Length: 92
Image (spheres, rainbow, N blue to C red):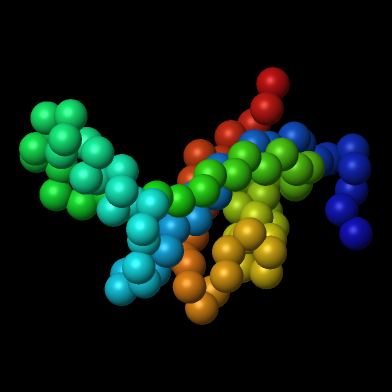
């Protein structure tokens, strides 16, 4: 059990994308639209979801570990998607 007196409020970003090889019709549509608008140097574009999670934790490593577990169990479908946890920061 965490000691509430020692915990700190953190904000962590989680980005979820389709795995390589999984069709991404939204990303393809956006890429084609970018090309039509003259952005000809865009070689690939992937659509995804971004989550900002605020939670209390004892350290930044603890916050990251908790969010990794949350993302792996709830935010991403491990068969179709991969995720990246980043921007672990203390909320002032």
